[in-house]
Length: 294
Image 1 (cartoon, helix red, strand yellow):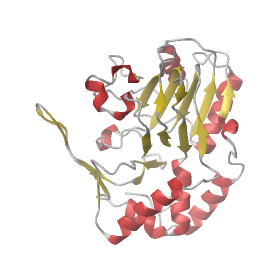
Image 2: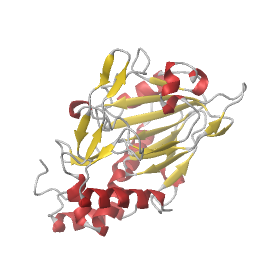
Image 3: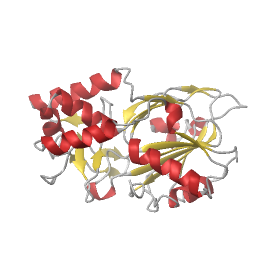
């Protein structure tokens, strides 16, 4: 239940207006504004840490640019710990250490059934939108070991900006998207029966600390939206904004040694082309924690 004093409560207009003004003040204008050069992401300097944290506080995301250190999972693991990211999501396709290695090299096997492990484009989403309420993905990292020969760029959008756009257009969108039955992800079946139970819940919600949380996917398969007029209008509005060339939408391709640190913001991925000499390899770490001090 959202607290009535929250700026995210659709009926608290005064608090929302104050939050909105602060949110947009000095908001990043270019993707370059999100990038911080770091010498060693495993052991940030105080200045590097402060620069990344400041960007995450403002935009819920930052991009670090470190040296090309090859295949080293200590990079996302140790960098995450410096921001309070400790509790990794153990999912079906994650590695034994709960960090996933995203590559299309295994697309002919079991992983090839899941789009992140292919070279196909991925539509707008937040990670873990199908997870149970107690396993919501609050923090997320992508670390680039090696980029594709061509393609594989991400678009990024702060979920708080999407909330702001929707609320400015019609507060009814927010009320609809905060319904407990707004979005359902049908059960996923495998040869042994139900591999993942159906999950139904809100699109926008607030966490125990009052922060805004979003679960969303632009997929049209394996998703069921509430069939009332308000929810359908709100979903259409999301699609409209995600299709627009918004000034707060950032496009970026991670190169070797670079990574995304975020509070599970909206993101997509273009398709890509690998060659024997250039195989795209990304480490993905998903957390039940938010970035500390954000």
